Length: 213
Image (tube, rainbow, N blue to C red):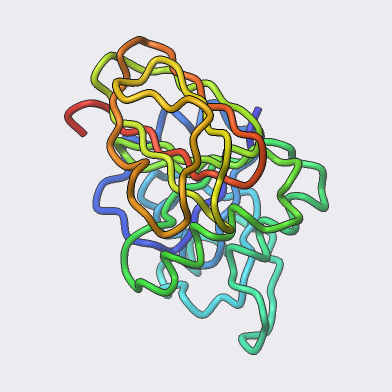
């Protein structure tokens, strides 16, 4: 069962997350991500960060629930989410689901997405969730389960990605290179309920969007 971590991005709706809570082995919040759990009436099992983004009413709610805090000074090199991810790896979590990573400041959003490539997470299955999307890294191969018409985008990170092979997609790739900084891998579509992606080296960000989402 996965560890769920909530970041302090922007989410208008949170009810779509409720089914995921029932699948969690633990639920953490990176500082201000606590506010989404308050809206879901689910106390986090732990809060990590410098606590500079906690509204007073959320602080009171956490205190009343006696939630453990891993508090860090504001002057630090890591973001609150990075600290939460590093602690998760240290404690042996091998599957992590992330919520609230996007929206708000562009610098924070980009940093949150790029945290998926952190060397400490190389052996950890980390998935980013939005109401209509899932995103994760492909280091060797992956299988995408969905419906015909779902959108799949493959974005190179850390340079070109050679020898990309896909199945189950409208525009297949056969031993081709996706070049870093180019948009060729955007908006492919599933032609079956299962698609595969295989690469020889490098890192791809795979984003699966539900049709109509």
